[in-house]
Image 1 (tube, helix red, strand yellow):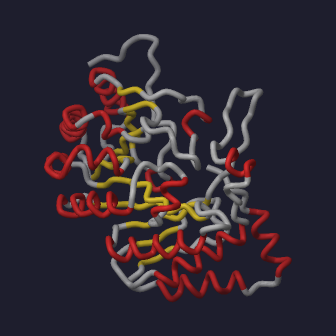
Image 2 (spheres, helix red, strand yellow):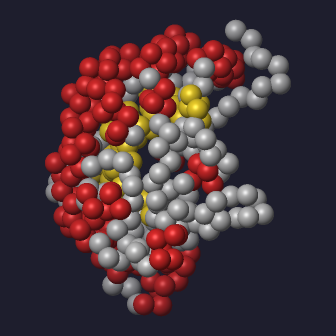
Image 3 (cartoon, helix red, strand yellow):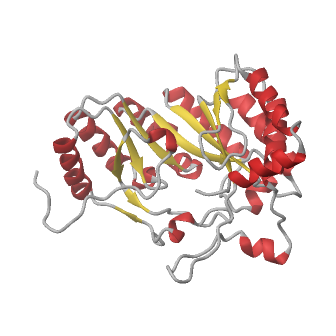
Length: 309
């Protein structure tokens, strides 16, 4: 299959840091939900609309990748919610990857609401075809925080879908967003999040920090939607050091399990990594050690870790 003239190879706008070595395959463009107050990142980066790419376009990109990286083993499907493209499209893409490459894993971002619409049987079918891991934006286990932030999911939905994924043998990577409850609800945010993680025991928990980015009129980039709630006083941003207290509370509430927790993003003030089965106490000590530093040192460290994507 030949590449169409004058059409550049398309790549996902965003990928998880953990997928830095994966070959990137763009299945959809942008985010089909695009209502989360804390996000808005796709419009900010110039992808304001959502669309599903035709299989023929995706197949052309796969052939280009095959010519460039014939021994590629790991693949990541983007953009924000590629499974919204439907089981037939995703199944064909996965089949083609396994046909063209010595595949070890195929991973994807996924919205809980999209997985719920696909249903248990379809999830099992995608697992059988070779979908190995999904990256889920848990963000919080607190229903009120999720509702305020317009995430479009509830803890009950997460429980249901997580059970389907576990039964199908698909690895789950949960993302937790420090600061999402603001100063008003940070304790409830962390306690409920820990309870959900303890219950569901995903393969990975990846810690992030809320990024309240400003608009850039010159570049035509919109700001974080949550800034409107900051301006009207209904949301008070957590301080950088406050997010470390959140991490400390989360770790105190988590129980030993096979889950691997990692702060694998540069915007985390304190970065801990380890298995909840064997490293939980050490991670707790690392966070407590930071909070025990003199105030001047803590401030300097926080200043070095500006929140960003």
